[in-house]
Image 1 (spheres, helix red, strand yellow):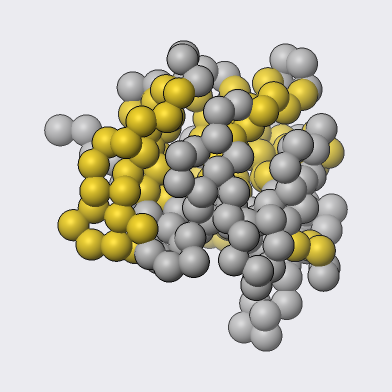
Image 2 (image 1 turned 60 degrees about the vertical axis):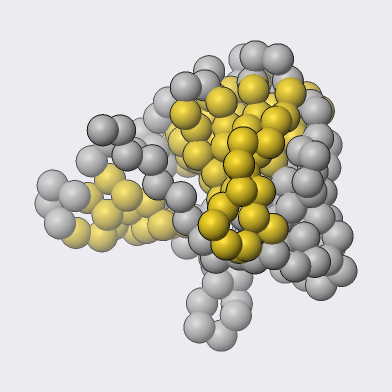
Amino acid sequence: MGDSLYVVGGRDHNEQKLSSVLRYDVKDERWVECAPMPSPRSGFAMCTLGECLYVAGGSTGTARGVADCLRYDVQSDTWEAMAPMQVGRYGCNACAVGGKIYAVGGFGDYGGGVCTGATECFDPATGQWTRLADMPTPRGWSTSFVLDGSIYVAGASQRGEVADVHLYDVASDTWSRVCDLPAKIRYGAALSLIHI
């Protein structure tokens, strides 16, 4: 975001959830501690919109698949609770498109292998989440990116590996299958978009 990179929450080497927020200033080449999240969490989705970071879902304490959403204002270094999602989950994705936040997929409970195809949209203007069309293939720990106003979701864990790539058309609230990856991916993959 701007000239800074943010590392938020997660787990340490002892598997303890973290609330820490670290900002790396690219120009000054140094790390800065920021205001921590209100509670430790891991496995959440995060994206940027304007001058804010949005954190949705994740695992907090012993709770898995929480629905809460937080907003971090980078200018004031403060956290604020937003309305919760309608579907609690961890291992989901979040993308910003057209001034709104979209949360996609995830797991409803830890260790149960229960994936969800739930798709929701948070509108900062109203402060509310709206449930949208579900992904055809429920998945968690997938990877996603935005291209030309559409959200692409690939790979993930659905009691095994999946290879399909799906596109969510924000304008029509519809999902379509784009292609298959050359190999099935369970989790731990990342996507990057390069404009040539």
